[in-house]
Length: 316
Image (cartoon, rainbow, N blue to C red; front, top):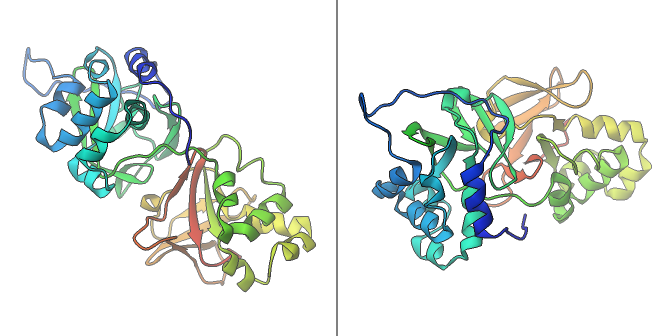
């Protein structure tokens, strides 16, 4: 998930002139009393000790002046605890190239003011970085890329700030590219190609893919890629397409007993959360459990066109 970053001055200009993207914007009452103007986004960040790492990053990236300009921005702001959770220290921030910092920080900014009540149930929106973030709102709260908003709707004169629990890292690979680069998905990749779905998971979108490991396919009777290629195309398509949802569903969006339609016509998945898992609605088969790829990792693998969850059984 890596790509060459743009020059810092481009992002400074982009923030200053940013237009409205696809999320709807709302107005917010001034909370500083009659006749008082809210501080700018930059002033809120630099004036709060809990944002000291973010403030240092904004300054080093050369974005402080842009975040002081009039506008209607939304900033998903990692506080110090969020940077710590991501393993990013102040020393690391001060050692990073300004352009690299700018690319990360602008991935946290939208060009329209979006209060928490305006966040959709599930949708993607382009950030000032030029890449999508995947937003959702449900009974568990408001999330971006599966990261929770822990304090919402901090008013600023040039937009709104939502404090988030982790740092958002811009993805640089599609779902297909990520899967192709992981040996443990080699049978899945063969199945996607055989099913004719490679273009779909390579192109624009906001897909969710529940990705069975090689061991999962082997347990389902597909020993290797050759076995996939020997199976009828229609059968492989039927299997693969019921592992794909056409909208973004992060672990934070999994609600017990909820259902979600797959791209296979007439087929939905039922969700379990104890533990997290999915199965075809109405199927007598056990749930395919959502698993982590490494100890302590989240379920979510963010791509430029959606999210991948690793599962331990083929969904049948």
